[in-house]
Image 1: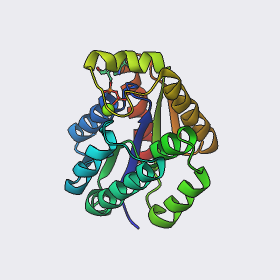
Image 2 (image 1 turned 120 degrees about the horizontal axis):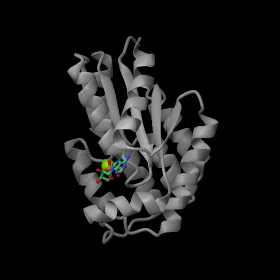
Image 3 (image 1 turned 180 degrees about the vertical axis):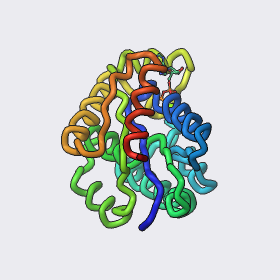
Image 4 (image 1 turned 90 degrees about the vertical axis):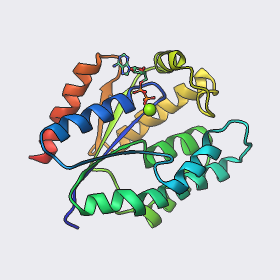
Length: 206
Ligand SMILES: Nc1ncnc2c1ncn2[C@@H]1O[C@H](COP(=O)(O)OP(=O)(O)O)[C@@H](O)[C@H]1O
Ligand SMILES: [Mg+2]
């Protein structure tokens, strides 16, 4: 497939994914690139309803239900948005993707990682990111930043040790997938991180 570039942003809550994803999108747009910025879960109409269930801590769901809702959201998201934009040659920047599912539902919630990877391979094997930016910082720093924003969804309600496990899961995944992961210290300044990401992305484009 002659297609655009697929870049995902991963990391714990408050690590700076949205900040950096949006900055990168804007910088590349300013340079004249066709850029499509998106996020998971919830960036389609069906996805917005799915997201509501996923993030509302008052709706009790099992880990398997949670996993399959993420897959449902992704199926819709890929078909409606990611695939057409990649086919049209866009740089697609996605805030969270399959790695989030492997880490949160697999490493942390304890669903078989083999099962998640098998499902992913069967359903979405064409949509492995060209680059995954992992913003790495401790849970206390990430959550500390988000506390200011007063977020209270299903994941923000979890304990510090939950988020430390998420961090470990990501680092493990980055070790296994060295060719596409770009791990950055998320405690550096927003501009320093943005510059490093920009340079990395430019090296992929040219
Ligand atoms: N490198 C950084 N240093 C300090 N604060 C940051 C940095 N990156 C992001 N922030 C701030 O931390 C908060 C969470 O950032 P955000 O991009 O929303 O994280 P995420 O999308 O990973 O949850 C925001 O208020 C943002 O301005
Ligand atoms: Mg965010």
